[in-house]
Image: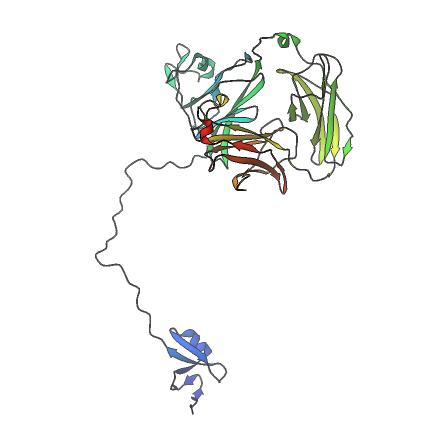
Length: 428
């Protein structure tokens, strides 16, 4: 029979299996293995041997001596906004065909990449930079590599007081091989930062492209007649209103726009009715809560005439989804893209063609694998009420079928699918 030890004032005698300690005393010691006993608050513990020390480095191993980098340092990510580019002038009116867009930065912060947008469609994104030289005395430009004459710029674009040849900090040139007839609104963006959080500066220019036939009737027509805006209810609870207008008789237009205040929220060259001297159009415009001032502007080439303004007070309406995005795919052999892509790259560009609520993000999906290829937040529209975005890179699988999803919270709109050709289909 085992004898229990006697304890008095936390002083214990050693038993045959170990030592008896109070729970508080055992907690203060280290390297103990304890079991509860029949005496409340008393543990039977055994002292364990200390663990062996961790092996150290062999004495013959010595740390390497620090040597400072003697070569060029790795540049930090540039987050400062680039300087505003100075664009070469383009004519306000031209024939369909080839056009070269060129720009320079003559001082200040350079960009990490630049983009070309044509009517809210991305045509180029890349780092194809050059540095043009301006001979300020003669008023001419010498471009390394031999640029065409249309790339020349005037003395008025230079810094006053410059004498002799002056080299740009950064330059770029992009040639569009085929311009379709109609109005073209070009935007040149110079960007730093990242694609997810770009810091950009931009310049814009517009031109009207005539048909190759050279018909001059459009030139002599002048400003279009004033459109008449149809009745719109002063209060709406549907979350949208129908904007309809008519030009009953007069000079017709080439396109029309819907304005909310001073901002263009919709633009179209399609009409619901059109004759030689009359036109009409209609569109459903979503409205956020609050007061709105709506008008229609009818344009002929670069000249526009505005209707009267109607006020609408919008109340909380149904949950609406963003407008359906339209897709465009460019490959390296597309003539309207120029030299903007590597041989295996593609450029997918999307934009909305109907008015819709403001989206907060867009996703690029592979329809076959259901993989999300890209997901980006949207912080601002692309102008004229158009939302747009792009993806440029090398597809993981080809051929493939892609789709763009445009979302506001959990409400999304899907584009039609677009086929990504295999590389062998692009070879010429």
